[in-house]
Image 1 (tube, rainbow, N blue to C red):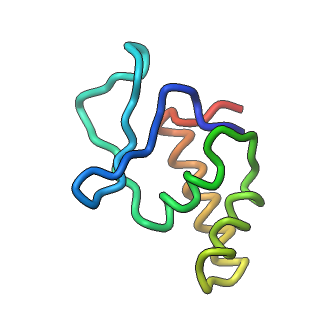
Image 2 (cartoon, rainbow, N blue to C red; image 1 turned 90 degrees about the horizontal axis):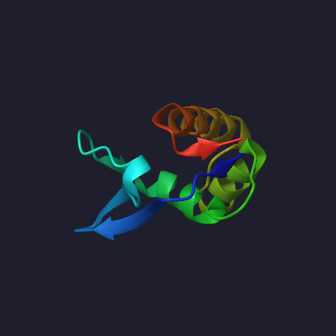
Length: 89
């Protein structure tokens, strides 16, 4: 999977906000905010082809979290990103 072109993570007033570029990505109805750990994962996989395993590695490298918990969290995060429309396969 890969984060679709046109989405960028920015820090705005100490918030991690995903912004979109281009007419096809614009949805002014909601703002997507990522918590610190989701932002760590985003920054580790942006502009690459990645798997849930890559997301898990980023999370376990940065935080003291066990692999089982990290995998469940990363799978849920990937599912959320897919449902929002951030990902392409």
